Image 1 (spheres, rainbow, N blue to C red):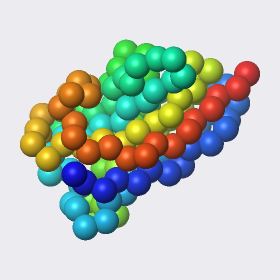
Image 2: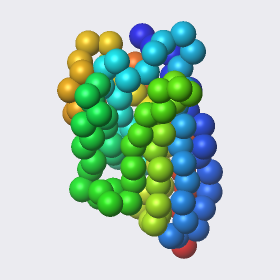
Image 3: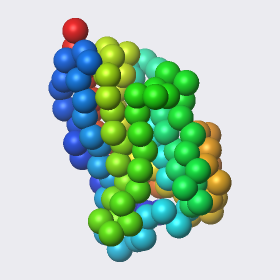
Length: 124
């Protein structure tokens, strides 16, 4: 298990932007697959964006061209830049990584370390 801490969530209006951050103390991020997931009330947790150890990224169709996942090695921080936010983006957002798998994937079963989540609320 890798300790992960998310931050950067908040409340914004439709069309606004937020940048989520995910940090880990004592563990170098990016050596395995990393991803951002979200879970809205009454819905299953879904993959939003993922980054493999080779930098390959995959996005869910619902966020493609609006969200960007990136890793800052110097800061040991994973980011999720979210633009043109919509009410349907409202959810608890989680950062996740795997200690076994390296290839980029949105399948949550491949991840074994999760943060506590940060809330994103988009209002019209």
